Image 1 (spheres, one colour):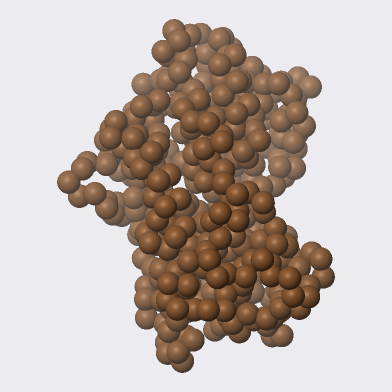
Image 2: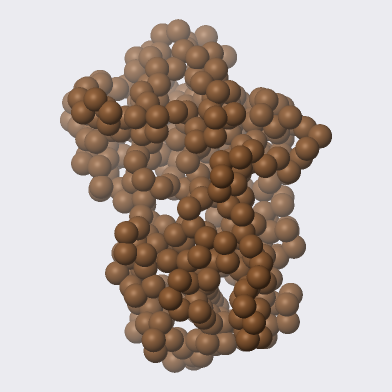
Length: 400
């Protein structure tokens, strides 16, 4: 851990999540000896498993490890929070007032959860019947709420705008519905899934499968809609039809909510932010900043027009490191990221289909001998056991 009052690093990484740790590990493998990383967290989470925690198929303890145990050897960890980037002076100021200077910068602090953006959401989470899988603290509550539900109306929300793992809001609906079906109470529960999109998923091949899944469980899908207000005092939500411009009020007995999400406030007002989105403005193929050649970004805090998933980061990290090394050698970046991402879509308590696609929304299966557009048990095993193993043992070590 770095203890210098005003340290300098040849490469400075902001963020110690999936992107930051993966890039740091790959830089060390490439022979880079002077790498600093700014992140205040004590705990590192494998967030994709939180959906299964909320669905009663994994424990929250499995998702967490001490940040110190995943930090690559030889990386100077500055245990602090970034608050300001000055790309002209090539410095990052932290919450404690330290100014860290750099020659090259990698920005990947993740996005922020805006719990107060939808009126009543924060207050509703304090009640017994509302939860969310978007934090480690709340995901276990989701499972308790699902278990207690025996009749009434269950609402599952999805906000407008880019969010982490866009499939997660509906995956928990399928996990819950399958549990209620197995308990023999699904016929007594009205399940409402509110989606802001005009289809179940952005890729038609997978959207068709998910429409059949929703129909199988009898889920009432509200497309092109969003919950715009929650009234916990009356256990009701206001649902806006984004196409018709109308509103509807639904009384709920349980609800899983997903907050709107955005770039961290300090990043959104920084000189490296995209003026429209607030995310770090980078070339979608090289991951190099559009104005500052010594700045790169990946993951949830970048402007990359793809889904914000760990699978996307797994493909972005090697491209970024290759291009960063090229720039450090005085060369043009030549490696290209094609927008690959994947979303493991859990459709039952023991079934999953793997949605893999690129910038053009074309399916790009990495397992050509397996039809990943079908609900499969082996894909469920991949989600439950294979992907976490790959994350902790290969991806964070810069090996996959």
